[in-house]
Image (cartoon, rainbow, N blue to C red; front, side, top):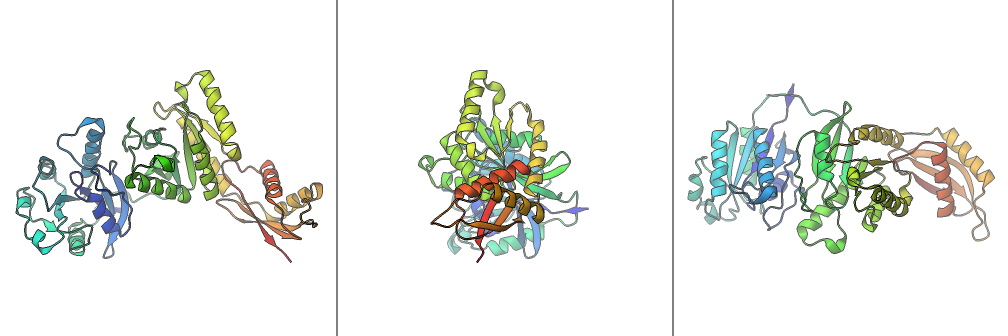
Length: 436
């Protein structure tokens, strides 16, 4: 069996690694900013050049003397990425002198057996291309001058990259993923801790500092013999709390993940309960059509009174998604996280459930006979027939004559459908069509 080669982008902070990743992918997939240290976790993408596919890994800035636990963990994540690489692209700055960080990275590559390419980024002009003597001192061969931002020489660089990729790599191919799971919530509710718990290792950074995760982190995780793509997202903040472009694009990507996920694990801090921000986020998830599991985290740290207050806040502010199952866990200790697979499987089954047209029609007909739609503008609408048109999420079409049913009657039908059939964990869409 063969697998795709893994290419790791490595360098000190603020040399343009994420900009180069976006250039290779030809889309803005990684968050970039003039501020150093925007990228923190390693993040993998599927890339391709000239018909050659490969995995591309963006890493946080490597520092020779990290200050504090967060920067130490960023360095460890970058080094772990190098350990699993088939090719390392070392990104240096063409416009500045070699630093201790650059020299430290060079020593790592010289000691390892992994193949590498040295690129001199920010070489935006012919003059900058000819002034790269300082990078020869790294002892890694001839630097390739590029401009990741402007695209200068990036085609030639990618040709060199593809030529350097090893062929016929042995290993297991990527497993078949049956669904995507997005972990979302406000900042610092334990999303990355839960992802590490599911992955069985410290795959993403965990810190008490809110906003540690900037980019969505995608991992393929085996849960009860099935493979899922699990996505850790940046904490979703209120608009008034978004401080800069980095926050803005991080939150933007988190919202995009919600729209594309099959199931959302919505983490709520058990110590703070459900907030108005959680309420708005739950509305967005339901509108997007994703399956939903409410996960009350840090449950073991609460007193009985605190548990009651948290459950009361969930029942009050999230009553409109009372169809979502609630799981009480501790991502830090792993308490009750073993119940997640059963909940995920259940929600996926309900999202894919299809009710035969004859059964839907019998149910809607009986509801209409017992409780006819209210009169509107002097006319009483009538449902001629109904059908489930789609799954994921389950979508029902009501063909109506004689006017509009109204949102209250549609909600009544949805509630009766849920009472008759088990759709726990998934939103239901009911649409009407005028039948003349």
